[in-house]
Image 1 (tube, rainbow, N blue to C red):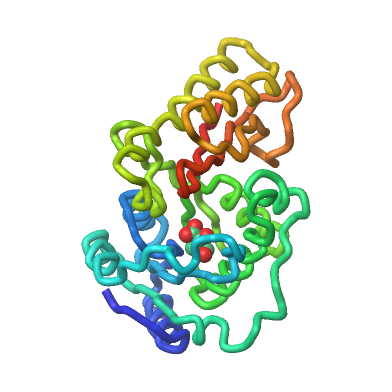
Image 2 (tube, helix red, strand yellow; image 1 turned 120 degrees about the horizontal axis):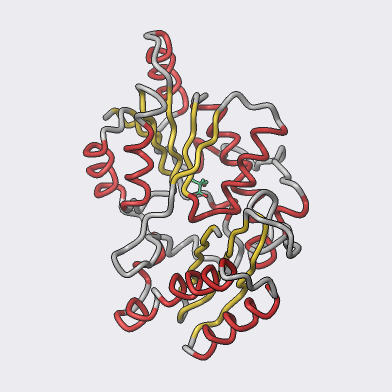
Length: 279
Ligand code: PAF
């Protein structure tokens, strides 16, 4: 694997790969890689002969109260995993490389998509995500880019960005990878205490139970959501939202809508966990 810390070095290497007729499949990350990321990297080989990963903890998508400073940075271990996953090029710029001057041109996602659910609790988050991903797409110029569905709203925001800005990249989703007890893998799981780690799979179990009720015909989504929030609170969580939405646009469904997804975000102690389940 070749590691590039500058845009110039990465571009030169990828020009050569493209010159040799290879398609480029790209998996952007913020590092602290787990099996979810590695599964995306392995899947990438189906979409290009040259696999590019990136590691960049993007300050612009963190709010003032978010965990930018304590976000885990595990570069050496990440590199070993990327080599094993068969990644050809790693782009790992520093902030000076990606943001040499304050970023004044920015991407503003769809007002609804960027302010609902995650956007309500993390104002400005998707504007930061979309801006850095557009920059990365312009640098890497991939044929395909893969994003995990654990960040469901992020996947929808980025798909919409590519569609509306006519970017020449195919955005592909990867299924959420889970621990044996159902907990969705996340870099933030490492913050959980032993007791919290034992409690954490409740979130996924709860989504599963809601899914069963919906499949059995329940369509009083407000009641289902309120019940789920109360159950989390009763077990010591601080829930932010549990919401049944349409998969296509994250709008609230009517009783006639199909193609739904249940999304949730909740604090367990000081750790914020998110998860979702399609219905
Ligand atoms: O999902 C992530 O890790 C980040 O939001 C991304 C897409 C790498 C942009 O910084």
